[in-house]
Length: 397
Ligand code: PMP
Ligand code: GLU
Image (cartoon, rainbow, N blue to C red; front, side, top):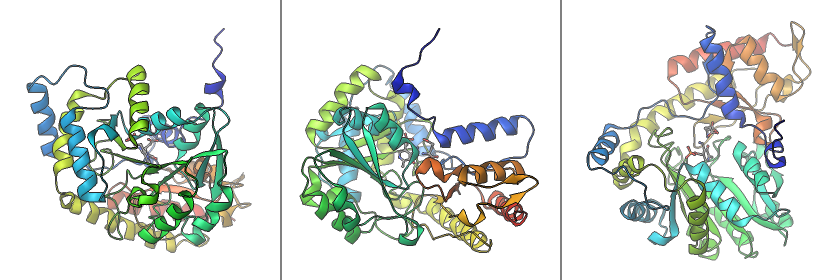
């Protein structure tokens, strides 16, 4: 009889991945499902990146790689951090991994002992809480709602910081809310965090380039917290490289060394071909991404207008990433055809069955009044999805 570990049993399946699996299964069964569940750009990887991969193979970059990544890749990452974020990292502070997801897991497993607390502002990205649980850590949630644009302040954070809290994990631009912390807001958080030198912050900046309000700001830019911050980034989102699997960290050297050690036992370095392909992308001027950004901006306007026109839906304008996170709690208690909506899980299932639109419940992101809509798809599909959602919501009473 197979007995799974307690570690595994306390962990939830990723809701984003579960929902996209469900919609794939329904599509395979012939249902006309529109999937707005997975946070994955619908663009293709740019040709110059594919070309670099081909060249990498032709040059026989096909063997095991150094665990933290090729030297010239890590140098390109240092340059990128300096160019885009004003951050000074040396090569030995960079570790390249099989996606930002692994980068985050490496850092958590390197620093968290069983019983340590990890503060996670909600709404949060699904995997933070589950990775912390696998490490034996205790997630402590501090919530912000739609009326504060889902952002927390230093004042809100301060009373939660104590000797037991070893880490804070957050993203900006945020998955699932699209919120972006500006420089003053980050400075405010930094001034509180710097008073607790035993705390490390994972600043997940993977949506850096999908920002509609201007320059991306990194937490590590503030000297008072530089040695407390691990900056996470990766190729998946801006460069449409979700399947290639490359994430990276800029971190204090001791943390980078720890992550290399863990990775050396778990996975070794990420794919040689992916690493070769990522070098020219990191060296490219990010202005290259302007067309993609314009497409996301136009889609954002389309979905915002549609959601604003739906009675009972509270929505804010996200400043980055490619998600909407509307509050749909005004529908709780309403029914259609014998189905009553009591929470966001019910709502996401109702919309899947009644509207054939797959979304993700806010419960998975620590926000039970909301649902997450990924708008990383074309405008025709988005228009049809919004029409279906509006129609299904109108039926509830
Ligand atoms: N952080 C956030 C906030 C994300 O949305 C994702 C989504 N994939 C990741 C990290 C992980 O990215 P990847 O592993 O593809 O680099
Ligand atoms: N990060 C994306 C999302 O939130 C991809 C899925 C995942 O990695 O969990 O949908």
